Length: 319
Image 1: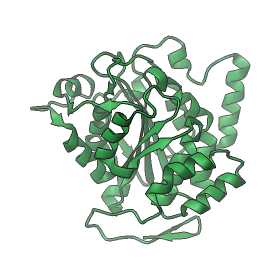
Image 2: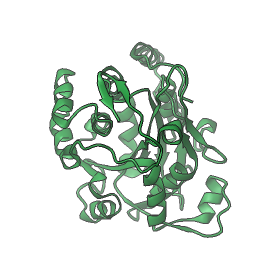
Image 3: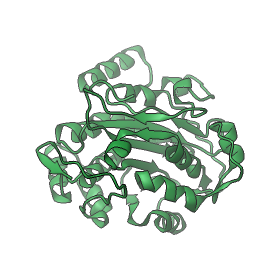
Image 4: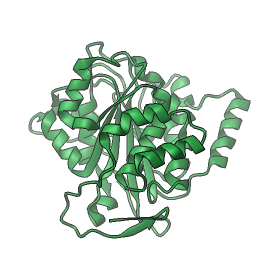
């Protein structure tokens, strides 16, 4: 729940060990699992991002991705590029005390494992959570997945000190290529999360709830089945405006997430972030520049009445 420090050396050692043993980074799923791992089961769960003496200014970052159909390769790409993501967030000072949660989204109308949600972590346990995800690859084939169910969980089953103590929203990234269902089904919520709702929740209402506490982005990557589909993009732009982001290259997803956080925290402007990518040897600069240019670099709007608190991270003072 946010303790510990990320180590690329630990990540590399685990990767070498898996290769030596002929194991996958996603051994739970590749081993034939067809039920949610207990550590990622959303039923009755609350995910917390908390401050500590080790991490006194926690910054929650949630990354939830569609694992159906053509999106099934997304977590493998994320896992391979975790060091780049954490390197930018930590070494470049894009965020103070980042705590990262990974989760997966399917279709609650037909998939065995339609929602999987890890814990907020600061160390290599986030890699462990990725490895526990079931890469189902199903989906209903009707251009809809249960993104609204994931947003419901993030709106009502997360607690962050960033919001409660400082009135600062966390970051939520949803990676997908289809539409959400028009309502959060009370039956699906009861079955998968355990809440007893009197009625379904309209999609627009749950979007309003989640965006109150989370800066919410929808990333639509190239190479997915509905990439370039105007209906999908228009749907998400209607809900999230310019925070519905098109990516020309899925391999740029980690860099896009890192720079989006850096912009939101006002640690960098876009040009500075692109120079950081270039210095790090990343080839994602063109894709990231095109994707994030509409967002600009303005200050994050705070909606809490809590007093602003000055802090310094990576040599940059933020309010």
